[in-house]
Image (cartoon, rainbow, N blue to C red; front, side):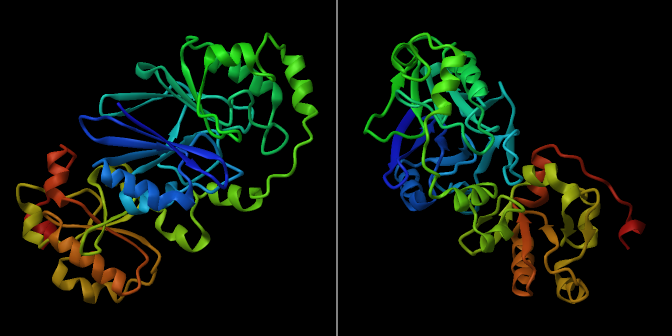
Length: 357
């Protein structure tokens, strides 16, 4: 496994890069918006393909770059199902395992700092990434944003301290230059949660911290509920778009399979092609490319979500750019077209000649 610990000085936030060295598939845990260029450059230098961004929670002290990374690299955003955000591609439940190549990452729901806190455990490497659930000799605050000291205590005891003592804890922040700790150390030395502290003692400690109001919370929380995207950027969150070298917006056939009912599907092949070996996609409209310009003149909803496709992606790429140039704001070409759809073994229809006439 390839591993890097990265740091944002302004917010004292750690971002973690994990990757499977054989497949070159990677994840970033808690990426920071201001560091997006640094992170993309590192991925390129190491020849890695970003599969997921994993958020430990909806942050109040910095804005995530997960939405920007999804737009630019085509990765999927991951957040707890309990976080209350509508933007993620994957909403993980407690105990769910994400697979990235041979790398297995278990999501452990650890609420208390917020409702949606998740710690990500990598059993094969004896690592857990705890976000704000537990720090080196500390823990996240519980006095705002659904904070609950009793729940945090239970989360740490059942989901972190229950792990083998040698498990390495990588926190979401540190303000004194410390990079990691272990379960054994925190069980013994954490002044809030360790040394045999009872739940009542922990609650009393947390209730008397008298911490300052987070200076970025009013900006960070609303933005992070939209994967860190600002208002003028959120029009691209409808799908995990990537751009080709020719600036064609694309989505994968796998995504179309899961979201076909949410978009308008346009097949730009000739009618006779629908009768061929590749078949047709259920629910799609057939608008051949040479008729598209005339047809779209009657389409009034410029913000309608449209996915165009053809045999392999060439014609649909031209169609997507035509639509964007005409002012349609939510457009994508299905990468690989019906060739990719058939390769995945996804269902097709076999219309009759009369149906396409």
